View 1 (cartoon, helix red, strand yellow):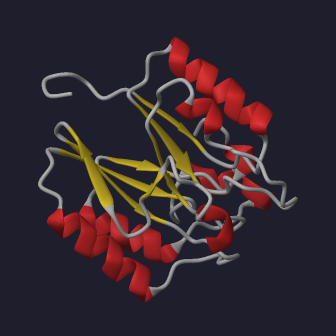
View 2 (cartoon, rainbow, N blue to C red):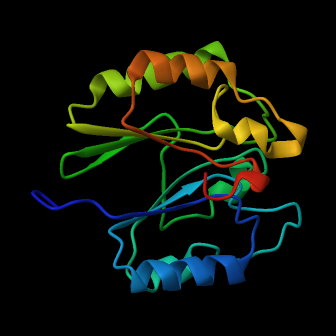
Length: 179
């Protein structure tokens, strides 16, 4: 990927829907994406035993993800083909991508999460840096759409101001699709 732009398909809140995963994987193939980034809530409220990443993997797409509040440790352990970015980073060419998740029904980030984001970003030496979070940050337009103005996360806002990523990819607020 050196000297080439990294083309990403980012999505969140699949909630265990194999048909949504299939549509996204087809789009990724059509658009020739280099990477699929899933911003949490990969699994849903119904605990069906689905191979949610299979549509992407069978098309040769690389997948990275962070857990969302509907994703539980035992479900994430089944995802052998994707890379969990919670508290980690990966590099593709000159782009570093780090993640912070909030699995196991956790609805906000804490000071330990801030420290983790800061630590991971301090290790990245990439020219461009992306932060992936399931939660959205306070002070974004996503607050206007979700659940009558669902407030963004303060810890995530603080982390963004500190580590200054080039891009934030988040989900959680279904009503803010595309923002």
